[in-house]
Length: 186
Image (cartoon, rainbow, N blue to C red):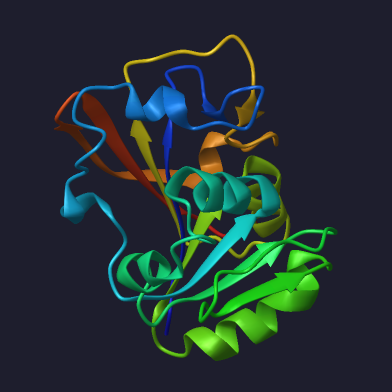
């Protein structure tokens, strides 16, 4: 059975993006331009992300102007974008814009993923919705040596330590890698 994995880089104080929804803070960290491939989730069939994450990637990588890059970056990946807006989609990309709750769409996401994994990329509110319905299996954070004064929180929910079991903690270049198994609520 597939796993649902949240895996993202965060600042020391827990932000995914700055106030402008930019991830540039991350790429300013030495080594961030060439991430260790072992840090990325394996056997992924589906990406799930919010509109701000999706738009930042489109703009930063110029994926509308260069749709072949989408195929290079995400071959065979279906991407679900949770949004209420009509957003551009790179030519040839399997991107599905959805305006519903995670609980409503999750059966469709699981069907597309089959036996492969689902990678929740962000944002924090989207991750919170997965936590709300007890649907996250792994929480992986790559903590950067940087802090922001504000922005998008990685998890705008209260989650007690009884829900998280540390399974890995290690150095990854300039970053700290923390991986938690998420325990089901009772």
